[in-house]
Length: 227
Image (cartoon, rainbow, N blue to C red):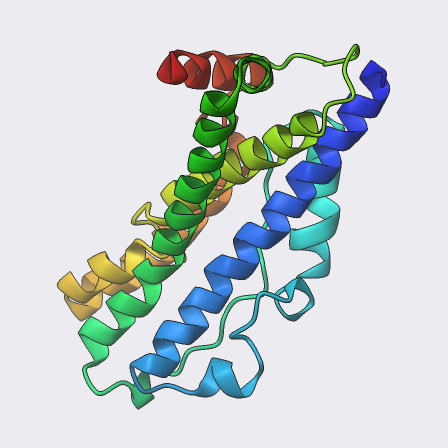
């Protein structure tokens, strides 16, 4: 197991984690919309963890893959979940619930991944060493333990789901967090909010690499949290 193989494995695990994260996120939107009275997404088969139903060719596959290969912040998106708010019984509350359940679902997945890492760490001395090594970006070139890919996958799941959840809670259109703020604005301010917010989100996504810190920073922060 050499360094090149480890890099490829990391990229594969990040892609798996990313596609799973967006599948959970979008299917959660569809599930809540259906629960609150809008069956649009359910009728289109979007209440599923099958990533094929949620894939946007450029935003889900090409852009994230290029970013990972170039060691850039993981950036991408899924096919938006269609929602018709006219079907909601309580349009304001139902729209907010449908929006925030996506990030909440990502935090649930991140918590499960964290628990997996904690369990591995506490199971044995070897497990503890592998978990801390994973958090610090170790290559593990001298071991073939099955715990190595498991820890790497769990860590990728944790990081990507946290980033996706936090990012989508930012109150800037068209992100999920904006669906809370927009209901508090008058019509005139809402039009400005939607226009300016969408442009700000675009420029921030493509220029705000500091939101997703580099590998060494991520590893050291989470390593300290485990200590």
